[in-house]
Length: 170
Image 1 (cartoon, one colour):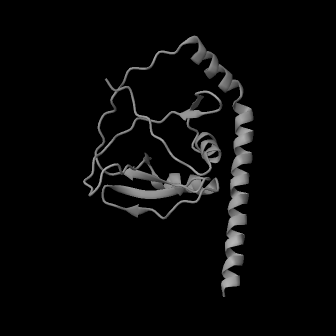
Image 2 (spheres, rainbow, N blue to C red; image 1 turned 60 degrees about the horizontal axis):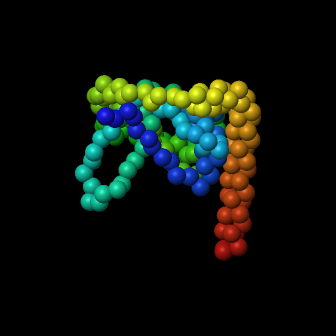
């Protein structure tokens, strides 16, 4: 039977986005090996919408107060799109350090009770890895802050280059 869901975010700057998930969104993580982080999420839900084609998927994070969430993200320097009332919920979108967009919404629809899956059994190797990660947490936070700064610096350089290109074309 199902024990959970595994979502994947593809990114042009995966390290910066991982740092964002860990330090800004404060998602718990485990190192699956070689620094490959897998993040824990709160209970989730899935919906199926009609479409003209298959293999189109979206990921939204759910919040209980979109205005407070957007204010918190903006205070942390995270770009967020304006909030729109879609009827089924209040929708915004945040920009990850890698440039990708991630939908966030405050649902107005009823939500199902979470499916409680079986927890996977942890072996000694997994427990050692989890313990080692918690002892390295301070270093990871420092590295994450550095990555976010580098990502912002790269964005500014890119914007400057685009501005110069626009001036040359005129």
